[in-house]
Length: 247
Image (cartoon, rainbow, N blue to C red; front, side, top):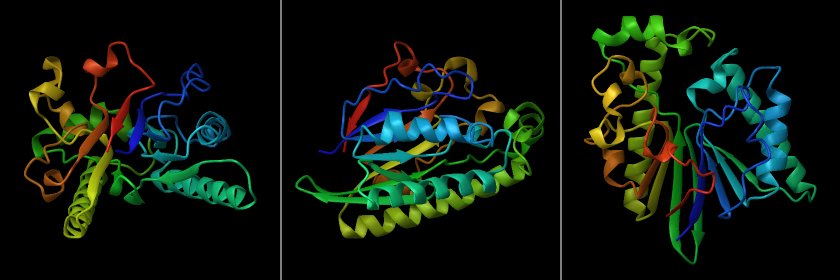
């Protein structure tokens, strides 16, 4: 079993209280989105958090972007920042600095082959498919389409198709190779009532945060699927930064 610690929705751009408080409970850490916005102003604090509170404590840190990482910026700018940050971390590791590996899961795959078997980690934001009847209210209401440059419900839906196609292709390949699979996403892959608070069930706005992948190829080979965001849920009560899943 490969233990991975799960943390999400720290919102460090709103509060720095979590910036030094992730006690390691496993060798690997998965940060599943909405950790902090990647605006020009917030990039140094976010990078410092990743370096000092995460990469100096864990063997590897998996990072999935949430919808809020791009607030005050654009998705192209955010991806550029994280790719540059990864290059910096890789360079510092090559120079002998004691840092864990930074793994950006932006349609990313990470393979681990050890005594526990062959494990593959897949990750993406997993934007949802907002249906036609909900598009107007979602576009007008959510900050995703007010605070992110050049981003509309049409872009959101198009990216959903890209992420879903990629996940299904990856799982098909991994299935043939007999590997165990974990998929890390920010948005929820299910609309099962057990995963959606009653107040949000069936609402138009909820279609922007969760979808139903139960009939997809990628659903059938998932060993564990840890979402980062689904409004309020049972995990939010007594939230623990020490949540660990075994793969």
